[in-house]
Amino acid sequence: MILFVSPHLDDVALSCGGLVYRLTSEGRPVTIASVCTADRPADRPLSEAAQREHRQWQLGDRPYERRRAEDEQACQVLGATAVHLGLLDAVYRCDERGAPLYTDDFIGGAVHPLDWQCHLPQVRSALAPLVRSATQVYCPLAIGGHVDHVIVRSAVESLARPSVLRYYEDFPYADLVDQFRPPAGLAYERVALTTHELDARIRAIACYPSQWSVMFGSAEAMSQRVQAYVARTGGERYWFVVDKTRPDA
Image (cartoon, rainbow, N blue to C red):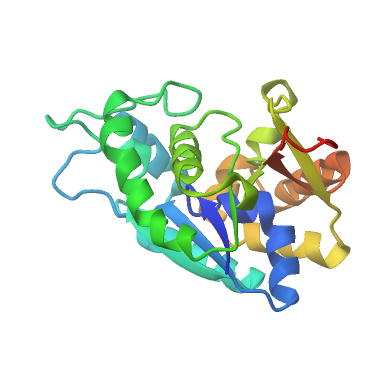
């Protein structure tokens, strides 16, 4: 089984849809494990950040039921198996007094110490059996610094051997050229996408209207952004740790 780890219910489709479609078209089993998929805690008031996200998504007070359905549809397009790990999104996580851990700083801000203490072990525990059974593991580079992406990367790195681990470029964050620098100690392999693979990636992203409408404004703009990025990078790029003990490294 090939495992793609998605912090949220759209990250793999956004970033890796072409490769996932290629692998499943070749008959190779692919699992997309999405980490932050839980419904909002009913006993806690929504933080301002969560209220803002809900207004943008336009899915009501309990949006994750619909978001999980969007993900199931996208995984069907890509031919992958969807696994929802049932952990809370950053905008819902609170301290022991019920105060939100993040307000406007969950993208590009520091990971809250309580998240390192409590949330990271939960992510590791949920991912561990999947990573153990995977022959290849893909996780986000955490370009853009979303705290959920940073935590997921840390969790996967603690579980997967470097030889089986690949990092994907978090789209659309990676499209912001001034935020992306080639990671130190990593090299990349490029997957040049066919027309069908690129189309599958776009169709999968289109399954998340609650998200692409916020990020891109329209389906047409989303398609254009994806095509432009793929043209600029030559496909999808996957990063790996350079083995400096090899003479050709």
